[in-house]
Image (cartoon, rainbow, N blue to C red; front, side, top):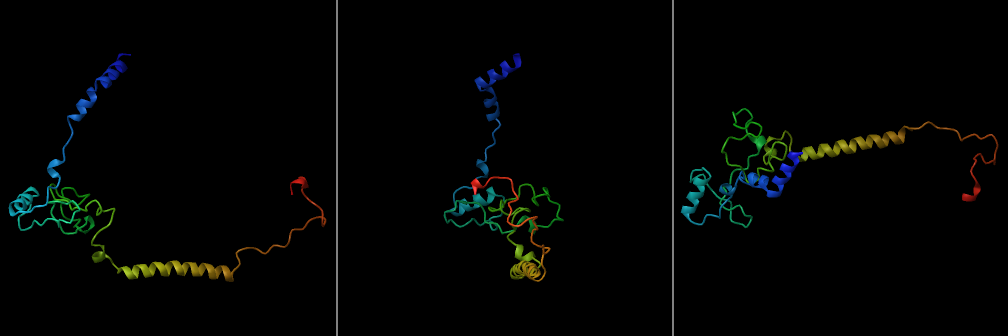
Length: 174
């Protein structure tokens, strides 16, 4: 009986909440800063992201809010080598590697920006084969339905007597 009283007292004094708020992680160091306008800000941003100054190029300042985040080449997770010894092989990433701005869209279970380069057939052939398959199968079904009957031809129902009602319910509902 004492344990629920202790837990209730901790909840009233908010002891659990104060303990859990001490271990909050701040993401402020990883947030992009303002767009670099001077060469010193550009060099500081390149150092912040661990890039050489000649490799660093920020996104254009078009109001989307990318700030000083570096503009990286469009390489999805599926375009990276699966035989390279990655630190995180399920995501094809190394520890400390800069992530692309759109990396949330380019996972192995999502889209790949370079799918046209790796595709076996061009887009028009894939769309054409889809329509050929759909319309070919539906054409076969309709022609088969027209040429071959799918039901057995039955004779009309034979009743013991003509013009006699063969049901037990009343006519007042009809």
